[in-house]
Length: 179
Image 1 (spheres, rainbow, N blue to C red):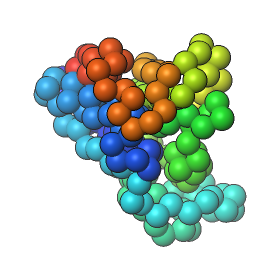
Image 2 (cartoon, rainbow, N blue to C red; image 1 turned 90 degrees about the vertical axis):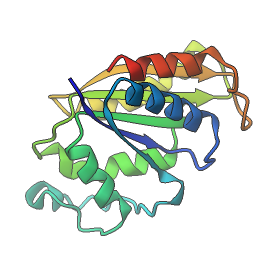
Image 3 (tube, rainbow, N blue to C red; image 1 turned 30 degrees about the vertical axis):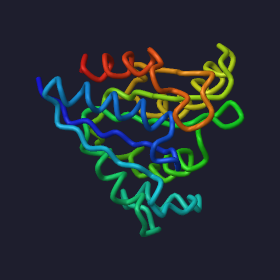
């Protein structure tokens, strides 16, 4: 069954390592016949959440910027995929800011049930992966109908192009293709 998939890449380096994981996932999901939309945050304006909680009543944020459009796409997607570089054992600040701004989804009738994470780090350790996953999963568990359906972690990559030829690219393709 064809699914509507939204991929959000949070790398500010358009050809960065996590962006390349996202591109491979995209290819796999597209080859499987899914409807895929790819969004990069590198050119988006997303302000910080103000914590006013007006969105819980209005189902919409009081701030008007690119987070509005992305959040609406998330609301209507069957699957949401996030790609991020790891900074200090956590997702990138730009992705965290977007996730904070997705607070209106909490009380909405969101469609997504599966959430995936693709992430890269200079450090190649289980600790780097687990600390990042723990922080990200804190967001996912707030959505009772959704679950973290899978992830691909590629450590030991820092500079643009370090991931080229890495078997984790094929893993991301396979994961996307399995949806």
